[in-house]
Image: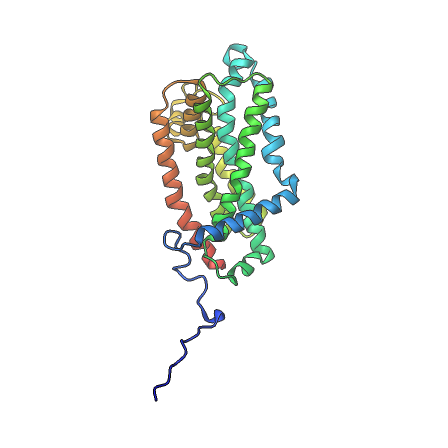
Length: 280
């Protein structure tokens, strides 16, 4: 008599975890769910430590007050209002670049505490912890943009285009930030301490932000510096945001901004994932 064999059962513990297939965001249906779950973890962590939001709440106010009322009288023919109109879109670009520093610090601190060792034991995509952390930063960047625009309106800034263009400017800024922050993610994976992450990132962010058109017009700079400013990704973003908020040509700046976003993703996402796999 033939005997029916029971289907083979594979214990859950024997299923390979964190395989290359699991790490493929294009083919794994559950990859996004993993990343969103870990993004929610990061958001809950931030809500429990609201002081971690100082750089996106109080810092924009301080920067606006300092640069408008200290330098505004010496620039733009002494008109602080005119300088504020020029300055705020620039500070928005600088602010989102600086806000990404905290992401690399937090990831590095998680590595030091062994949090990523716990992630390694879970049946999730390898890249989910990094992508989840980046997605969680969306809230920080949105708060930063709202603080700049909200307080800017209080002291006299006005959008001269239309609400749709203004929303597009904010969306472009956040999208650029989500690409630029992968530099911080990569540094967070390779630096030995969270303090080192901050130091390295400031060495990158400060030359990009001050060597740009954030605070002064490009035409007022020396010729050798103009060459750098004109290809600076922060300058391209700021020019696009100024055009969307205040009017003027934006097509070229938008194209350059999207190009820089693609370059940042294509370079630093693979580097960050490769560095993360060495830890995980």
